[in-house]
Image 1 (cartoon, rainbow, N blue to C red):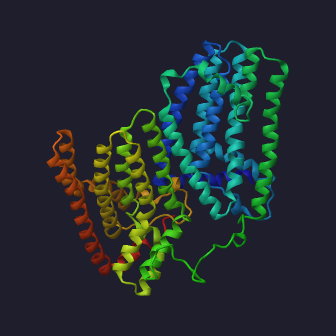
Image 2: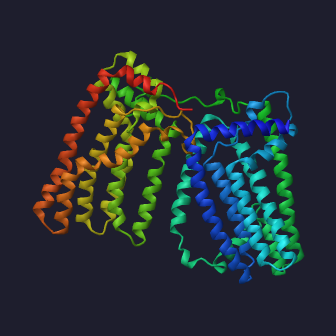
Length: 528
């Protein structure tokens, strides 16, 4: 059974990279970060050993293990082609566990982890005298086995049987975690990093399962009491024992119940009552076809991880800009208004693609295209618009230069109208199919099509054309303290995008009216 599953994985794995450019792009990105991190931790290891700062040793192993766990849980590669839930036949967990332990080593991330482990072991062996180097190598390999073969697989097994709702939550958490890691990484002052400053973190990690093996070696080198070394060794052994038993239990559960949590057990959605009757309308929406289309899209927003993946980034960005502004960079307050305004319209650049075959229900209902497009477009920009308004108000209150903040707000209004116009233009003229609802944003293949690339880069470029006639005199007027230029710029920066927005609406309505069948045919099938 083990050899059969391994051969099946290798055959399917080779096909993955031939048919999925996303996998190649993700491999390149992860490799750059992994090898860069390896260079940094190797240098830190050399400096720590020379300074005899032994607490940094478990820190190095812990960083590697934690990084692997975060990447595997937040940004799944999809390279592991053997899903336990598809093996729901008269099999026992003990029959397939050996294959499940080997397969991660055959993925690109498993190979990267092994390379990092070997290099870390070799560097430590060369720097440490005699048998200490051998002990370090053993600890490194044990730590790598715990990360790749046990903790990561245990984590994936625990979340793989979750329901659709839980998967969506997991996807959103993954997006936030990755964004926070990137922002946090950029905030580190590397000139202040040294083994001494990192020692407290190493002391803590040395007692955790992700670095207890390295912690035991560090305690031996530091001459700690025997019971401290024994306790860390016991933690390492217990990690493997408990982890293997838990993994076996989870795999057995997936074999017996491959569908995971029953959807029938999910709590039914509560419909809002309006004058004693149930309604799907959101508060304030009119009792019209447009009101119901708008309400449906708004209510579905929070249930679709594809949409939430783009929306959840906004509050994280706001918090980051606010933090930076309050810690010595107030100019980021003005920039934040502008960026949030630009992102509002870009979120509506493929409304029909996200709806997929669902737009057929609107087509056959006979709803006028004018009503349909405007309601759907408004629903797409409403959630990000709320964050934009919040950011604008916050910036006007906190900005040290109120006149400049007001000018930035005026310019951001034009940016909002311009981006909304470009988003509507692309969703009508450049609709493309997307991945099905519930797809992890990091494994979404739809973003690498030609239409998707055109939509992404076209939005970034096209948004400036309606904005430029007003933004240029507004900026020049501010630099030269010319009130006349600032007034002209303030008028044009709103009037021109507003006129373009109206013209685009008319153009898009005509386009969709004449090409509904072609539009539906483009987006009817999900990208798998």
